[in-house]
Length: 194
Ligand SMILES: [Zn+2]
Image (cartoon, rainbow, N blue to C red; front, side):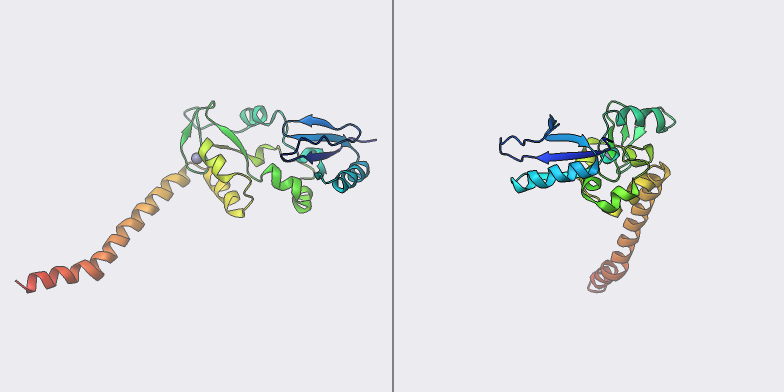
């Protein structure tokens, strides 16, 4: 019998203890490991008793060593530090929070994403990026494609230089437009009225 699936039980705020073979408390949840058929059977039983459950492949769960994996395979910047892929802020390795680009919580809940990560699992270095605490918290469990694009672009430090230049150019352009369309008229009126 293969232990390749996880049954995760959420008890929410109630202190009710879910009962099922092999179920043990892991962090905020209860978890049991086994083959898919058995886990689904237990899951149905627990759902009938009012518990919220998830059944997903073991490799779609957050691993205990993904942070170690990240630091051993993700290239640091030239100065030995990292930068947040979402805002570009410089981070020391102690400040880095390692973010799963496609959030673990989303994969646990989506058959389609589980298929996508079938062979690699969610804890690959391709799915891990450095982020500052604020950006990581702000992103949360958001699985939108916008975050995936930002993560991919943000890996390249030059992206933030170009982004700043573009914002500056837009600000100059906006001011120029404002001047031509609004201020110039006021100024000429003011001059003519004297
Ligand atoms: Zn950030």
